[in-house]
Length: 303
Ligand SMILES: CCCCC/C=C\C/C=C\CCC/C=C/C(=O)SCCNC(=O)CCNC(=O)[C@H](O)C(C)(C)COP(=O)(O)OP(=O)(O)OC[C@H]1O[C@@H](n2cnc3c(N)ncnc32)[C@H](O)[C@@H]1OP(=O)(O)O
Image (tube, rainbow, N blue to C red; front, side, top):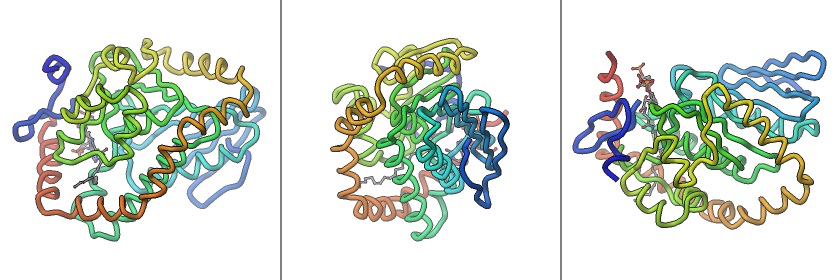
């Protein structure tokens, strides 16, 4: 366990803990601009780039929110719009989520959206986190995460909503739900998602320690499905997509939905209570203090 906790390039010291190292064819909106040529349809907003290949039915959704693709309210809104458009687009059968930023898939939820704001902001932010999870966990199209960089907390959650995960084989990269190391708690639906992915016992250890796994360790526990050289992440994702596409869509979709519906329904049933819990938890002075210290550590870690 300690080996897993300590292995890796950069860890941040925080209190007694160690932290993570480091085409749509359809319409326009005010934040998105679309352009198309032949079979490829590309759209780009400030934080999300979508490239849909009409000949294969595969869309690549690339996060392009420097420096670390943290999931801010704006990021989540733009991603949600892109996913919704793709889900409605009959020429799209599968979506690959990946990063356009070097070394980072996503740094997880944007801590600045959870720090020093008012309760209304926290509620709006949390609803958008719930929205993206609900959308992805019940997404009708095939989803594959091409994890080409580190992937903590909310980043890991997003990868776990996908049908398949391919991670770049770089020992500096880490993936996991590290919330406890920030002094915060993963909500029940984050927990459900990891239990559904790696099983209950592994999830217990993973969540309590806030473990971050190297690609090879993540493969061992089933947190990712494949580890490949970084330059092969996208081509492997495309090959895997083709295998998924060989299955009749309706049969695959219904199977996915039957497997995931109970987990989705649990959040839907407790959504308002979950939002209230989040707002009250994150507004606590002690939690704000922890997050403030964590942000300071992140900034001081710079060389
Ligand atoms: C009582 C019952 C309660 C029940 C529960 C109820 C409610 C639940 C409550 C809360 C749940 C919250 C769930 C939270 C989920 C999350 O996702 S929290 C975010 C976790 N993420 C992290 O810990 C990652 C932190 N970042 C890093 O470790 C590194 O930045 C890195 C991603 C490995 C990248 O390293 P490197 O390339 O070296 O880049 P820098 O560290 O220099 O970072 C560059 C700048 O980016 C800023 N930054 C990094 N991560 C974030 C982030 N997540 N949010 C906002 N900003 C971030 C970093 O500060 C640098 O900023 P400056 O350039 O210095 O300004």
